[in-house]
Image 1 (tube, helix red, strand yellow):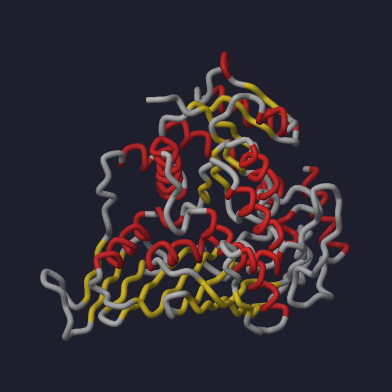
Image 2 (cartoon, helix red, strand yellow):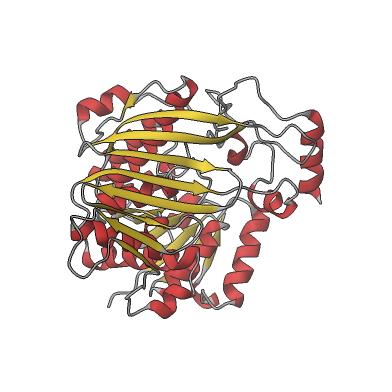
Length: 420
């Protein structure tokens, strides 16, 4: 079997992904990051844990030189909203791409990615891991089996509150004032809630509407966040006429992820706050071998369960790595919702959903960027709530209340926390 040489771009999340690439049989041969300290810390960890071979491993702070290293694939795990330009550079060289979500930060970047991809021999896969959690795999298995009937509706909730005194989180994930997390409109981090229900149902969003849940922190705590929204409640009308309701990255009380799919004959969900499954049917349409109400904990049913259980995000990270490497070995693109067109669709939901949120629910159609006539409508749309990589200011607000910003006292405490 041909060795697959993988490079890691982004020494934070990228270093974590290295472990799963190594476990799945790839050879991690290079890392690139523009932040010296984070780069050094990642290299030390990877060397110590023997994830990389010191005799065949290179370290870069220049992406173009990094691509010259002789790579089969690149894991793109730099800042959340800045993946697209680097993926395009990989496409231009025929290098395969596994990209953290979201795939593109603006509509124009989505157009550019697809155009470059269609000229390339590269395989592209979105590194969305939540559909591969054990309970979400079970939800998809049941949906695929057809016992729920026609799928009408699905819900997805990704809820990740962070305590106001969690200084370590600030230093690790939000470590300067213009960091993307401080300007993240609440529809943008959407794939952990949307991806699993797209995977389970096979549906693709075609129209989006969103509303904000505004609840800013007003007390004095370390804060540089310019978005006072606590969550976004997003709905989509899909290509199969079904409807989704889901969040972006929500910050309600009590951490957890929950998903539900409803059909004409029954419905399935993970019991909120647990990994267990509740599968229910109409009492007149109970399949043979099932009860009206079925409550159980799903199994992996996978020969590599030992590797799965050692991986992050409930084992999902290893499965994503294995899927990506399988696609490379077989020379095929991943299936919905991991392929580039699905990834750009999810990003479009995030981007246009935020515009709907700012307009208090005005719906936006999601363009089909497989079509060149649709691409032309969006090829110059670069509106973004984020700071650009070269210090470009945001071109739109990041909060449903544009006047909101952190107080001077909060910023002072934030900078003190970062400095330690």
